[in-house]
Length: 309
Image 1 (cartoon, one colour):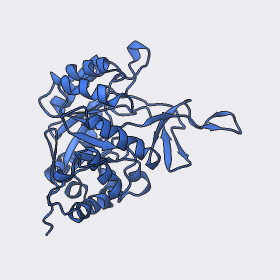
Image 2 (cartoon, helix red, strand yellow):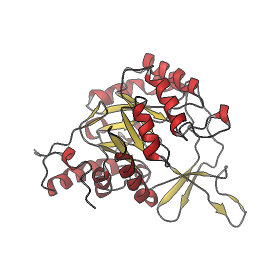
Image 3 (cartoon, rainbow, N blue to C red):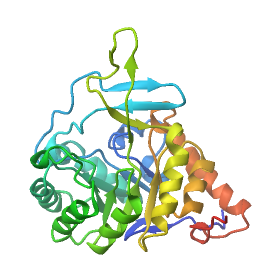
Image 4 (cartoon, rainbow, N blue to C red):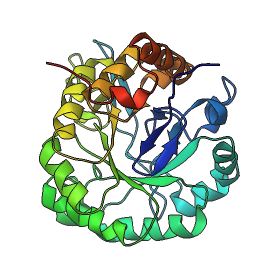
């Protein structure tokens, strides 16, 4: 039995190891049970984003592969609403948590009021949730379509509103810009932890048709191609806040995850890698433990933020 301690505390969400899954890339867990025991292997799973009422999402095509180990997606957070989500996945997610894996439910909205409504429904109908991830990259429809968390002020407004709705831990999923200032504002308004980064806006044109390769002109880029950018932003944010960070962006191997931890992340989320290798998160759990031991450490927490320049 390993003598390395891998348990971490992500703002009150207790994880047996630092490996989480990125929302939208892992279904809601059950889709991967045929590959390994999700509940007994991972530290946490983050479910697909869910709003108070069902969303249809964006028109197809929604996904395109890019050169340079990346994909673009414009799914638009299609979801069945909180009631539909709980009805379909609630029993399974209870079993995941009973096996020792934290369950993080992502909350989406197009206005402060929609976030409040969704949080109220989650509080009432999702006792299996270990905590919540607030996706502040959703567009604010009432104010012209800018992301809800585009500025420190708008991010704090959403965070303050949902903070009054639950006593369970709240992690905030941040857009890839101004992370130090926005992270500080979120901490000041009650966030227990931060998750960064979300996808980076990009564009891909089919030169034969002269049209976008997706139904929309722009979409979110993810995958190994953005990893170095994500590590840099995790490090920048870690210098500005005192709450834990979950690092996201191109984590494909245990070495990628270790980089995030050294930059200041308490946990890491595996995203696009799940789509190319369904066993990737499991392999990263195993590889991270070996890395901690190779560093002469007995506790992964001792390596958080241990980067030296």
